[in-house]
Amino acid sequence: MPAMPSDRPPPKRSPEERSGSGELGFPGLGLPASSGLRLAACLLATLLLAWMGLAQAWSWGGRPAEPASVQLAQLPPEARQTLTLIKRGGPFPYAKDASVFGNREGLLPRQARGYYREYTVPTPGARDRGARRIVAGRGGDYWYTADHYRSFQRIRE
Image 1 (cartoon, rainbow, N blue to C red):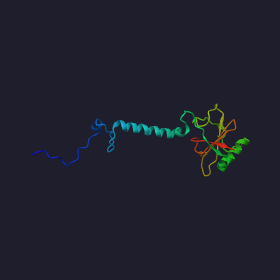
Image 2 (cartoon, rainbow, N blue to C red):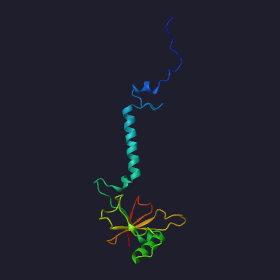
Image 3 (cartoon, rainbow, N blue to C red):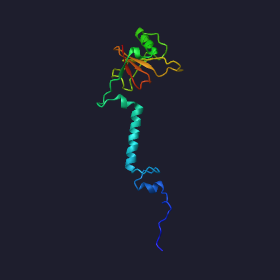
Image 4 (spheres, rainbow, N blue to C red):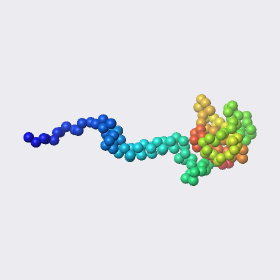
């Protein structure tokens, strides 16, 4: 009697057995290993760029992109009050106000260390200093960040 095809599904193979077949080893995914590795590398690179903020901060030429600007009148009232205090020379409500801002993120124009100083913009309802800051340059340039140095807007008066 001739052998009849079985109605049973093929037996499941272990990851070790599948590795030689070009499958990635994720059940049901069925991608060739090279595609899976390429996909994983792309995802990792995208996550790293997003985390570091470089996707937005750097232009194609390899130089920092010019940050956006904001009119003084568009800033929250607390930021306008902080800018007034900065121009008066104080008094500042937070001990860390007027400390050197190192621009480690590289989002502001490159200057010598000590050129930039940072000041806290109070955040209503926050228990700590919050994320909002104004960074002042010695040349009279002022920068606002609402997200603790992840992005900046040049303040236009």
